[in-house]
Amino acid sequence: MGAPYAEVIGDPIAHSKSPLIHRFWLQKLGIDADYRAVQVHPDMLHEYLVSRRGDLGWRGCNVTAPHKQTVAPFMARLSREATRAGAVNTVVRGEAGTRSGFNTDVLAITEILRAAWPPTFPDQVAPYVQVIGAGGAAWAAVIGALDTGHGADFDFFNRTPEKALAMAQRLSLPPSFAGGLDGIGPIRKDDDRPEHQRYSHIVINASSMGMLGNDDVPIDLSRYYPDTVVVDMAYNPGGTGLIAQARRHGLLAFDGLDVLVRQAAEAFKLFFRTEPPREHDSELRELLTR
Ligand code: ATR
Image (cartoon, rainbow, N blue to C red; front, side, top):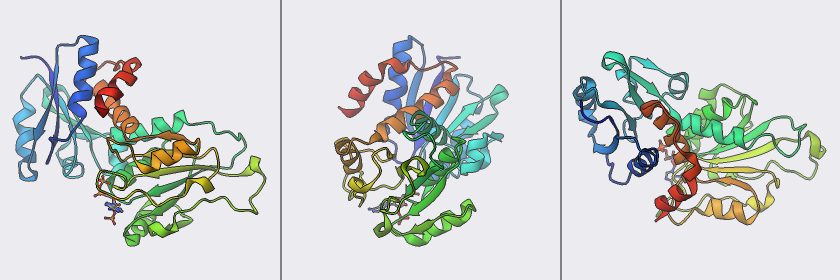
């Protein structure tokens, strides 16, 4: 058996930052293992998995577009998060080549929102989460927020309002609102209940807005509560407008790299059965933004 290794698969894949992150941690820990990017065409997904089945060095792979949903049927078992999200972003090789599917995107959102808890006002009724986008990332965000265990109310906003509505219905919780991007606004009103009884507010961008070449999320954070937490799942080397705005208003903000590094950390633990050295996060961030 050669040195252990993991991979990230997708189509396209050249843009993936996962090899840089995992190799950085492997090198810091002095582990003799590798992490590679492999382009896998949608028609070749099963063939790829079969080709790795007997390879004892293969610890598993991260999965990105367009395979996150289609890879699930090839798993012998799915984690609770992967089942609920209907998507797999991490495949782990078990004994005798059996494959288990996990969703560390969900785990990353849960971890981020737990880190942002408790909010400033201890008597708040519940987190109130505005989700922007209605694709796979949005669904992972919803499951991740529910898994914090604090309960949550949701609003959904999407370029195609019908998809936001469909998402709200699929969640089968009574959402306050589902609609287009022009509806994005604060829940704060002049006749709000006393501060200590109000909602806490979380905004999650799970759309492609803010990524290179796309418009920024049409939101005015100056009107939001000062303890609003902003999570941007979109990444842009120059920073997104949403994160810039959040920082300008002094809001607690987690950007696309925070989400990326946290989902990678959960996958790293599954592949290499050890904690990644997160004390080097600032050096890693610097590498990732170069
Ligand atoms: P992912 O799996 O990463 O969530 P996706 O399923 O393709 O990817 O979802 C992308 C999301 O970003 C969708 O909500 C999409 O809106 P539509 O449902 O209307 O397609 C949203 N999106 C993509 N490009 C956008 C743009 N330029 N402006 C606004 N929303 C955009």
